[in-house]
Image (cartoon, rainbow, N blue to C red; front, side, top):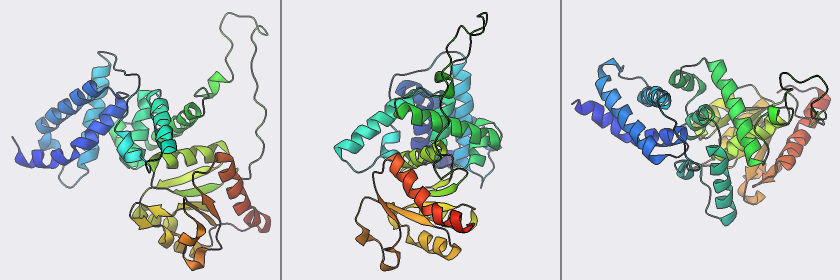
Length: 318
């Protein structure tokens, strides 16, 4: 056996297990079987791997293909699991936050495998859209569309709503005369002030970041990122185009203030997000808007709308 292959694959086993459990909705036995099959297939095909390329994405691709091969032969399911999301998406150990995490796991397990897959690859493993597209064998645009549908469905499930517009507006069944079905029509949404606004989201907790992104979409806006780490946040702040930003003050062991400096230099308005008091901010930023976490969706939308209103009134483009 190739000792180099073993040495390089071994550190990635936890990632493979997490991805597999996301695909199988927490079925530990099925996930372990998938990981074992993936390692065997990877060792057999090791000569086809190009050194210096992304090994994790290559292994994920093998696991993805193996999952769909096995799934075509037998149905894989479990009621609730997704335990591997806990350590990566967890928050400080308070009773309320643990209840939120349990609620998230329950909703996540109800998603379709294709929706769970893209959320795990993006939110847990941090793969960019291009690499996710390679793993699942789809175009980047298709992956982005699937991601949007997955986030929307997850948000609806967490809010106790049916996932998808079809549940709110049922289609008429074939064979029935027109006028015999009752179709529910939703009223036009009220303006939020965020229509077509692009907002950079800098947040190190994947669950919270996905929730913020879903809130922005429901308000008519669009999330840029999210950026979970300082290095990615700095690149987004310097290179991406957006109208405003939401900045979690603490990013793991780092602080977000270098990102705020870049935004200040570009003239882009931003809001700090933190569970701490304003005194945690450096003196130069203490007059900037701050929203305390956890923040209800309505308050977040209202704060962003207020932040963008002056720019809209004077015609400033960020």
